[in-house]
Amino acid sequence: MFHIGHLAIINRAADMCEKLIVGVNSDALVQEYKNKTPVIGEEDRAEIVRNLKKVYTAEIVSTLDKLELWNKYNFDAVFIGDDWKGNERWLQTEKVLAEVGVQVVYLPHTEGISSTTLRVEIPMRAEDHNSEV
Image (cartoon, rainbow, N blue to C red):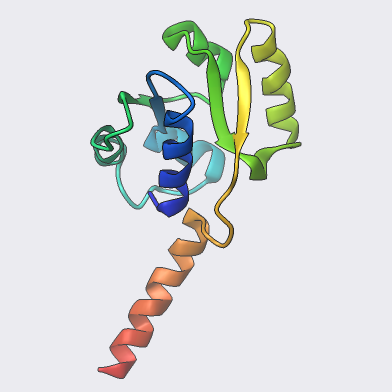
């Protein structure tokens, strides 16, 4: 679910590069690694991101393997929220990408916001609103 934290990272990343390509995880990939069905489908999510003025393009990706993605898109840097810094998967990603000259850049995470939190809060807010009516 796209939220203000995603927008903040996209804007910061775009300010640090010439052309920002945003990887939008496919529905199948989200289901595989988060065990969740996206609220908004991959095509719609990609179209939302493509229409942000600082985004060069958005591509639907079906893998978390950044080296595989680098082989396809040949990028110079990967941008990720700093809440992932020190995570075992990202430490390994840093090592692998360093071998091909790609930098992993950790950008400030927006505190108090996540898609998981919104999945819980939105139905609760709807219930509160309905009980007030």
